[in-house]
Length: 284
Length: 75
Image (tube, rainbow over all chains, first blue to last red; front, top):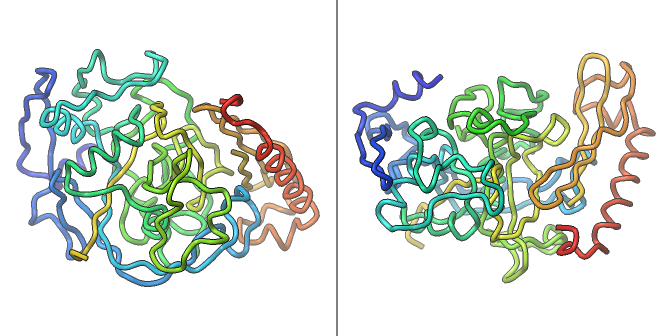
């Protein structure tokens, strides 16, 4: 699986980490991109999501999920770009080297850390970064010339326009689609980003279910779907909690749904939450 | 946060409730229905309406209970 990823990414670039560790990262080259992709300033490929409507919230034919996932409602978005993969430790190390930003660290439990005393082991370079709070995620995206996706942008990128239940369609989740049903066992809990080919979203995004929960820009409001504007909603103006989307490595089969939303303390740094970034397609 | 979901396998329909407390996700498997329900996600509403109604009711009761909980203390 690692081999397949590396096959896309010649030549390798050697970086000296903030910690002094030498490691390898392998950014995509422009020639490797499809017509719907472009590279962000951090070297991470982004997928183009065309403007248009989609159905947000729990699927019309289902009644599960949380009450905050109702009602299903139509949302219209302008076009935008969003990261093809979750942000990796390797990319996050580049951010730390350039800015002096703090290293990922669990808020209270050292056994949940993958970085060691602020140093990034080479073995986790292609795993999604974890133990970052909402402010860390926002700072990374801004450093990369991007921003956190809105909740609506995240959901459209995850399920497309046909109101499906999972990023890959309506077939029940399996270990061919995503990383889930796991107990914490250190770095082996996570998988490198982008290895689940059958689990891709309609727009070609990887890991829109499983691996890690993902911070999005919006404040959380339990009733937001009942009052959300139809065009390009950006969430409540203020709040106490931020929204997490996707699902983490610990979820079991019934909880894997592309419309799942969870409220989280924006200051929380835990071992199942990471993020990806987005960017406007036009200058407006 | 209380969320619910169901999934099919060849012999059963599994329903579960999940509750986040802090960063720990508690997942409770509450109901297993036998094989006549296991036709796939899209058909659950048609094949198991009574069971699903009971489950939706339970999810909503728990949801309301959490809305009245001081989540700071829960966390």
